[in-house]
Image (cartoon, rainbow, N blue to C red; front, side, top):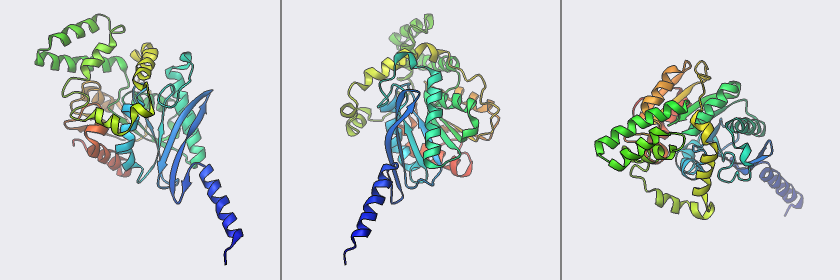
Length: 334
């Protein structure tokens, strides 16, 4: 006989579960906004169980949701979601976290944003600590956050990231000039000379040629095809302009960003991973950050990879991260 009371109980239980963050039948599918001192930050969380260890991914840029967060999320992120609860934050002023006042687009506010989001995640999913994974600028942000709130973290993963912006620019210029001179590219030589005369004014010239050196940031990946497949232009019209605008607004701060050894003496297990051909954040610079770190650590170089290893070395990056997170062991070269 049909049990009406049972049906009512089932429907009520389903509604409560759906409302509490998208957890049903073991699955976690949360999409929503977190208030951070007046800024509405967009956050997604995916995984097979809310009981799994928690990871928060910080994209590069600043503002690189479309070519930083999304490609990580649909490649390495999906593999991590099989064993972990993975959160993806659209940083202040980027992706779906729009509307932040221009004068609030600061490094200090980004650090506080990470703290507020981690506090939300810890409370919502009943966690004591989280692991931070940061790519490029996101790795620098992770290091800055860790220097202030190490008690909230159980692991750090730095992907093609930097802790000293001026040292990053210096090593990037050196690697790019080596490639440019080898190629005999006169236009690049002229523009990089212009950059050296006024780095703060012409920083985009270094970015332009570093992104093309040593196989290029695309490195054989069909990025236009990826943008079409993920419907990036349809979902986020005008994203290129917004990304450039955000970088411009934060440029002065970014050029002198320096963790100043703030994490060197931490004991949080840390993985430093970089593409062998990365001319933006070079292996030389990442290795220097790794050597200074006093805690348990791993250093991994991905062969034939550039600045977006989640696109051109997906399986190897995934393996390096999983082995590190699960056992603390290192895969030095892949």
